[in-house]
Length: 181
Image (cartoon, rainbow, N blue to C red):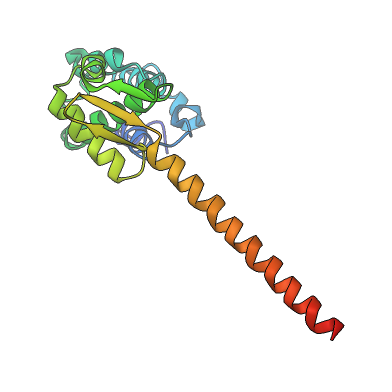
């Protein structure tokens, strides 16, 4: 892109947005073309948004997003993708938050994400169905029980491998018996 092109700044903002939505590790600000805009207020705000996103810092993410001086939400195209971006950020923070636990209170997760318990349950249901979280929701006691499905998948793999090796052993014995006859 040319630095003098008035749409280049918008294109850079959209590349950053798409990059975050796609869970990409590529940093669009490392490109030579982006350096020309690094001092622009909107680009600084997008960089701050990306930094908060990478650091799983939900508070900074929301603060940057809602900062009127950054004018992120004044762009109608970006405004269309704010909710999916917020959801992606919440999912990312949720994954990091629940990772060390086998059992965690949904109420605690809701407090950390600054959401209602029902919203967290809905988010968790979607993530469980998408197989991004391996666990079950205990709604009666208000817990997320982690690790159940991931372990059963691993167990199924080992069971299949064991059956396969048993079959190969049986085949080997049968072939060995035929050769000696």
